[in-house]
Image (cartoon, rainbow, N blue to C red; front, top):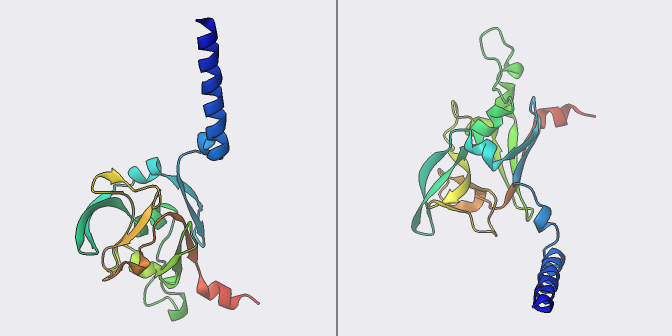
Length: 182
């Protein structure tokens, strides 16, 4: 009896070791994160828990003729949580200095290197008409592993070319600052 128990323990340890070899880092992987970087007052990472606290929205998105209910957070809201602001406006502000935030762009990058580009003005909830959500659920279920942890869904685009899956990073770029650099 004791020999059988010892053999089962050895089998269990062998299987555990095999899994660690076959799936490197899986046992130690933390919660999925989204990196938010670039020309913002603050940068950092967001977890799913952070995003769920940002008042997610549900919407219907039709992909390849099939309507799906998605759940996520508008990208403009994510940028605002890192301090993005459009900037000053008014008669006394020189034209070149009006709304500097709206002159920036947001580059969304997926795990496979696919990228989608947006003006920050079109993403700002108070300004633009583009409805882009960072999504983690479709039809009430988490994204499939090949699309997880996050997918960008652009509800206002007529095709999904700017809706990459496995999104890892949103970077805000100030093209005017790059132009001014020597």
